[in-house]
Length: 328
Image (tube, rainbow, N blue to C red):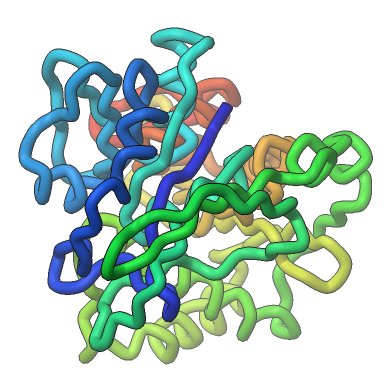
């Protein structure tokens, strides 16, 4: 079972100035009861605020910039990898997502239950909020109440049968694929900026405000789509883009294993979290790799994330220094 544990105020605040903005006797009792003997997943900043692994449970820290190791302490690069690592340790472990905002947002599509403590308090100037989610996908169970001066109510959102474990084959059959054209370019650029922004925020950074990335991307794609040195394939559910892949073509001086000197640089690999594990990423990857083959490339390169390594290795990419390479 994959669960999520959070306490939020009436105005959806979960944090202020790096702290939980209330102290209520008994409010955190459920957290200890549920997570003890199981696995807990938290972001780097949340872990560093605590300063040590929580006892009697497997602590998995999601971080792309630091590595945490110790007794019952390991590091993952994403929520999905954290869940997989916990199940590798012990398939009977329950996995609980414990924040912060970025992890909650990433995890919601995968959780079976959300244990949300509703705190009867309005927090002014809160700076961390619980992400929005589709309540129609869950059944709501109201539990116990507690607190003296500040009241709280335990709630559990249980994902409705079929909302998570969908027929993936049937869903995948509804997905269509097409090459990127000017008609989709604006949406493609917005998705790319959103993806890069989330990658910054996931490691506790803010994108530089003085960079006009939208204009730069529009100029790049216009020029390189026009001369054929950039192609992208899109996965669509109806009119909605739910996955992307891109390939840029560059030339280097020819060498023995690549006598054409032409290299494909893979980029823009993204699948909407709600559509993952349906084979979409593999199909998108295959289509741009075939574009590279048609262009006469001798290899495809990518700097892969830990999460992406599994996909690329399964496809046939090999480690090559700081890059992964797929020989054509």
